[in-house]
Length: 487
Image (tube, rainbow, N blue to C red; front, side, top):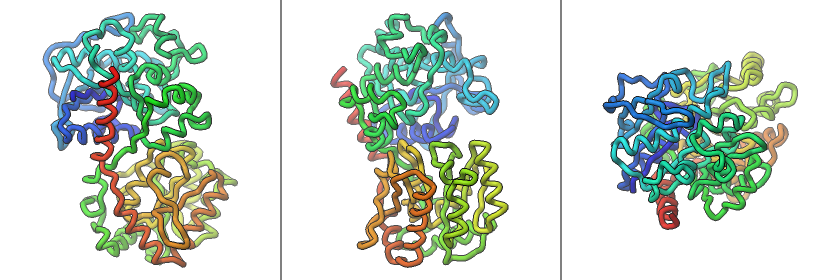
């Protein structure tokens, strides 16, 4: 099959979260199955033209009121034969930030910017004389592609192409004033028919949910959760209506990068057979973070965006969060890597100063992220909701036991500890409250000190788990076949 991935992010070119990792890894995995997979995304300011190949001749894109003339660049995904195409238009994409910048977190012309991406995806195919069997769009910024495929008459030459839309996070929908709707290039008749209308505004994600041939999301449990009001962000009714076309497929892990036997970013590599070597990484982590170098005290690691979705209010909220109690009442060390909301960054700095067994790094550091996975004994993810989650899978692969909330991809990948049998791969909490986080971390620490054989058995069981993208790619292949059969 010819498969066109339409996306606003793809590693290593542009990334704000797991979307970028998923698009690139899935594309490579599908390519290995024999499919002709290609990716299209904007050329943002930070993507260096000099490292790309210019495709000769400008590309005219009819978009709303105007025809926009763009440049087109290409390269290959590193380590693969997957072509990546970049839509080059300085006025639209030549700025810092993908969706916004700190002073303007959501650019006011995003409807125009990402409408251009949707139209340009089809013009790209015409320019390179390559027709996709599947247009696979990812999240709201790429949502216009499947909508245009169904409702825009100019793309009749794509009548045999089917569309798949993947929801990576329901919390981001692309909702804007409907005065910006003409930028989509669609008639006002389609405003209602395609599903854009959202309380007298326009909603890109909602329209894609209505218009796409097939819908996927990034874990089986999340596919069920988003059909309920508490997780559906007002789209649960549409998703229940389209439940036959919605499938949850767990994201995979790039096991060439995240693998303790191959990881070049950790001091000592190890496998399940040499698990004792993990202790050397723990020592290196304690030294790096300025903590007591003590192999007998458990380390609870955390790598996170400091945002409400991740449960940081319940963990770090001043005067009511559980982190201070955890570190003063339970014999453990805590290591945090993350950035995000200003209040939370300040609170982490305060805890850094006050607690000798707490160490936080504000920002992001790739080397440190690998060291935390390899050197920690437990990994904390108390997410309010988690469509898929990757760090709990990294943790299992590294023999680091996850402490997670029962939601989304977390519950799909972590088996709760059984105190009687020692079975399980982690510790699951049900309620997102400071007390529940405290109790579950305490439970894990109790097992560390009193059930060492159980801890070792859980580590080994976790390291046996298979999370490669080849598994997910075959499931996407089935979705594509189904979409084409029903076209």
